[in-house]
Image 1 (tube, rainbow, N blue to C red):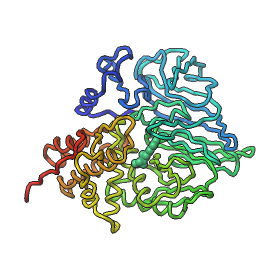
Image 2 (cartoon, protein in one colour):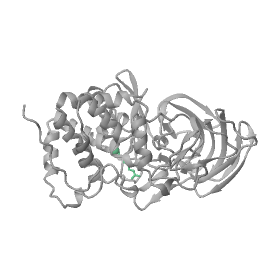
Image 3 (cartoon, rainbow, N blue to C red):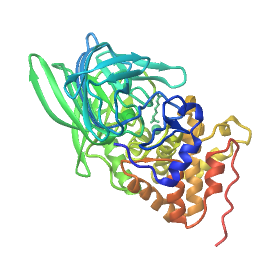
Image 4 (cartoon, helix red, strand yellow):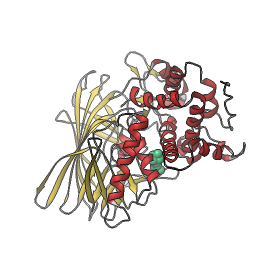
Length: 469
Ligand code: ARG
Ligand code: ZN
């Protein structure tokens, strides 16, 4: 499911993609393929994502044994061909593949690094819906990137947790790992009795057979692959409700998690989000606390994962991502500040409302950082592949920009923008220029210089002089 990018912003995106990332593929000129539209690889993760088709649904059947970390899996992908496809590629670096079938017929395949090339028995005609079934088994493991840390399929003492951001989905299932290609998901997870399996969305059923339990989970709203999650292990599970939807939380009993605090903190963060950002975008919510050893939390869709007991602000941050990141998702990884700046700003708003510093005070404290300090040195809206999670440039300066936008627009227009942004682009893909368009529409004037100095320069920006009134 790939949302259309607005025409004006698409032009900006294409112009900004470096030519090295778009060369090579046949028929591509400046990244634009004549006739059937364009495929633009991500500027930071050009190998993730594949041209020629659009995934609708992933059906992941996972049989996992914590004692050995052995996985026996079948992935069935439903996609639509956007081109005539004699062959196509998927992203995959998981356990050994046993066989691949396309529309029920055996298909030839070849692996070259993370690219899995599939050659269907008959070429797929443009416009056709098709299914790819991949059977694989072995012991999956994570990626360990010098800049991005440990992510992907992470085995734990009593199970495993999958945390994909940014390009770790391929460690445990064959995927079109393109941040723009959202799809719905079904997870059917079989584990030994006494072990619990959770995933995104809502649990559909649970059945027991031969000492094993199979739980089926469904995410029925479009989801980018970096947000897909499973958590397997010993868990205590709590089921409450917030705003009429299930709040499903789980805590590793051997860790420091507090199930009641996770349930109420999550509910409070959802209520806070609905007030400031609008209607919560998914059919359930929750949280999972496990002992993972990665030192970050992840906003996995509808149900974030925390590595150890989260504080209130961390829950607010991950829940805010449900609107900003999960529902409204960047078109490329270059615009990751649209996730992290907004989620950090949500923390500042929460503090403002709960007896902490105001967002303006937090801004002022950070703004005191002298010009020339490394704090100002990366571009917030294009930090570079290795610095997508740079706390200062992406998280803090992203939030500072939003505070400066608030001061420039005034509170009513700014809070209208927070709602409009979430509502207008719900389940969609966006770029910074979409935000500029929405902000300018609400403000009724040009905000180009403000966006440019805060997001696209490497120097400390001057404050906007406000017209006296
Ligand atoms: N998006 C997460 C958060 O800010 C951080 C993920 C960090 N991921 C990583 N591979 N280091 O909530
Ligand atoms: Zn975040």
